[in-house]
Image (cartoon, rainbow, N blue to C red):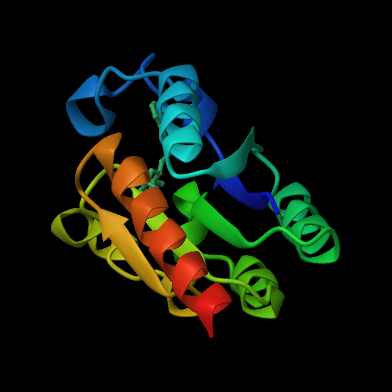
Length: 151
Ligand code: CA2
């Protein structure tokens, strides 16, 4: 059976590679998605990647993932990481594993970025490795899905 996973990119991540390269690197979101799709194929996962600038849209996609049997969620919640109880609640309600990823090391940045409201609803987080955070996060998610489907 096909194992489906959802990769979600939060607000402003559509700007990746176009501004602030000193913080977020020169890789575009399309580059990230291409690399994710390639790794997903190697891991035998069917990955769908989506980006939205709207909190409610991200929440709706997580609900839809739950309703349609998606096995796991990889998410960079962007700035919502630090503010959104509603997004955390949606991730908590999702029954499969979720992994949070960040391009930057949020703990080495401004105080307001050092707290994640959403990471506590995830099995773990990968941060600070630029676009590689997504790939490491996808490997971790695949491992979790494999373990939970064994039991
Ligand atoms: O490091 C990350 O991945 C962040 O989730 C990125 C968010 C930021 O609010 C979080 O604190 C950490 C920002 C995403 C916006 O990305 C941009 C990329 C290029 C130009 C402007 C924004």
